[in-house]
Length: 300
Image (cartoon, rainbow, N blue to C red):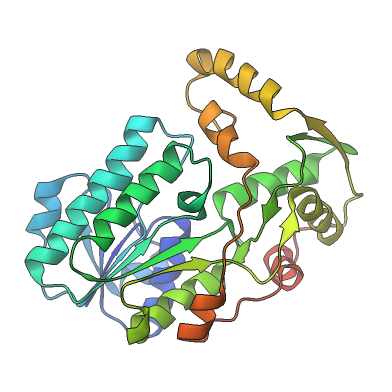
């Protein structure tokens, strides 16, 4: 039996579909009022609850061989919410694993935990990583970069919408030279399968990134070409100016994708070393142009 959190999210839902396709028994901790994808709902046990509710988490039945913890709160959620879900929620899952004698614990962190200048999301992910690593569990930590696929993820979808609607020119926060290493959703799911089956993955943290590194401007140009759009002129706006405007606007509009915290991560290099995951587990991600064409097929 596998315990999966975040099964209604983008990564978690893909992990669930793959596990069900392999015939695995899966228990999903799902927020009250949320439902699973219909194709998977009949193949799993559903427990309604919240990772932040320790009583609910600890009351779940045992018999679990591995926890796959995908649930998270991302920007633009408020800082308190991000910490509560990502740190307190992980603490509750760790406590459950300890008390129930769970054999393996797979934690989905994020590339932002490795940034030189972390925002509140990166800080929360790093704090959660430390909880997992210090818990005495047979853990593996996965740090995906920007995840993309046919139906998401969130930041990829936003960028595709912007590129599709760009009227020949596109504002870009900062220099556009930040290095990215987007990762195809099928490769992310494959990483979960591999680390679950590989003893050498125990006690390790792995970068889960694509095979191709591009600058943000190059990424926009590649998306434009695959979407059949003209390459937009980039209007680079100084990051300091954007941060000043964001600080003024945040009290009026609340948390948003252009909040000061979000902007702090937008010009960080989001590249990770994929060598250890390849060496230990035989992981081989696809090239970016191959993955993007699969993700955007029919979306021209």
